[in-house]
Image (cartoon, one colour):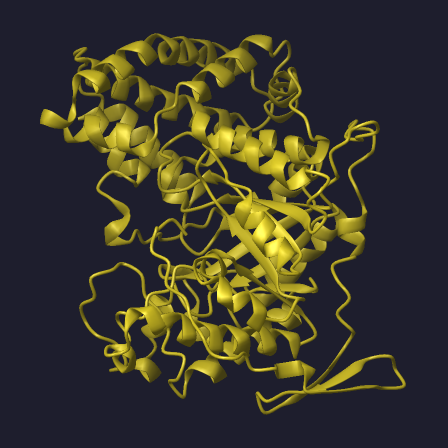
Amino acid sequence: MVCSSRCAADFLPLSGCLRRVHRASCGSVCRQSRNGFCCRSPTLTGLSTPARLRQRKDDAGLGTEGDEMADLKTRGLMLDLARGMERKPYYEELLPWLREWGYNLLHLHLLDDQGCRLVFPRRPELASEGAFTAQEMRAFISSAGRCGIEVVPEIESLGHASRLNALPCFRGAFLRSAKTPLNALDPEHPATRPLLNDLFSDAAEIFPSPVIHAGLDEVSFASVKRYRRVPKEDHWRIFAEHAAWVHDAVRCLGRRPAMWADHLLSSPQMARMFGKDLLPVDWHYRPGVDPKSLDFLSDAGFEVWAAPSTVWWRVRLFSGPPVFQNIREFASLSRAPQRTRVTGIVNTVWCSWRYLTGAVDWPIAWAGRLFASGREEPDWCRRFCEDFYGLRGAAGAACAVEELYAAAPEGPEIDAVCAGGERVTPEVKRVCGSRLPALERSVQRLEKVLPRARRNAERLYDVVLSARLLVRWAAKGAGVGLRPDPSLAAECRRRWKEARPYPIEVFPDAGRWQHVLRLAAALCG
């Protein structure tokens, strides 16, 4: 979800599950759909689930009495399992920490171009190696529920469809070369709707959440043969008809459809075509967040969730100051009292190949606390280091962690140094030289406390390894000679394999040094 391309779609929506409504004696609603099937489901009245009503105003001190800002009833974390899965126990072990940090929802991105991390019973052929079975996922959802955390599945249903398009039933439906890394299912292919109905049906049977997220972001029809002569300005019509059908398919399972909002914003005429129970998730990952998108979606009658990002394509190794500012701004805008329809915020973490596992713990914890309390707490990093790493007297470690993330560069700055030559401009040299002392101090402090970590020491070790890589980046950019360090690259590989035993495919357009191990090889050679 990081491309600037925005193509969307037009057509009156299929009215779907709102065709005929009568109330049965059991209190359920029967909806006759133009999709060609009928369903019985509880009336969809919103998102008032026990997990979401259980607000974190408890002994952790997250109450907001006296604040003028509104509470966010949904405080979520999105993890991108499809494009990089940790060992399965990682997710179970994370749950009590998410609760402690203030989250009450976990959004699992399960299907994308590079992988499928759930064995869908009706479509097991889609599953990647190591995918959760339905039984394993149900057990995980039960564990999450005991921690007061709701688990929402996301299934890409139009864009990010390379894995679906590779199925034999779609052979010949797509052009071999397209001038965009984005793609799409063929909405009119006879295999498309049965496939998606199977995936949504399995999701509804496995996940008790009232919401199914259908993706619907970053769509390009350039590779779909049947649309090669359709003017690009009319592509939004194709999108809208298919999206409306997707929403109906989800409704007819008794669930509420959610989608990423980028196409709604690029083609705002679609807003009047979709049912107002749709839950758009408004994602923006740069600082300087413009509230106009939240306000447009709210004014159109939708309940809205905001979506900042801890990791996206400009993040390598560590989340730097722009990430913290993006989350800070989006959280503040979402809590503004006039935005009563903005009820939630979801912190997205994309493509785990960009970082070692432990490098995201602090920004995830920081964001969760901010979402829950509505304010930044000066001693929160110290408390995080004490609790998560089990460090006594963690003030020094906290100072090192905060200094490290404050000095973290963005992806283009890292790429410039790795590429070398004319890309290492005087400004790049200045930036690297100015950050090198802070990075070296952070490494020294963290190496000193690492042996004292009584919990999650391997995750703190990930932070140390990543910080050592940043020291080499800054030194190289500043023109400070360092000897090759193959042992550092080898340790990064060891930690990667230990934490992520399942194969992870990196798409070609990800960039030469987006993968943390490729970056380590470049900086340590």
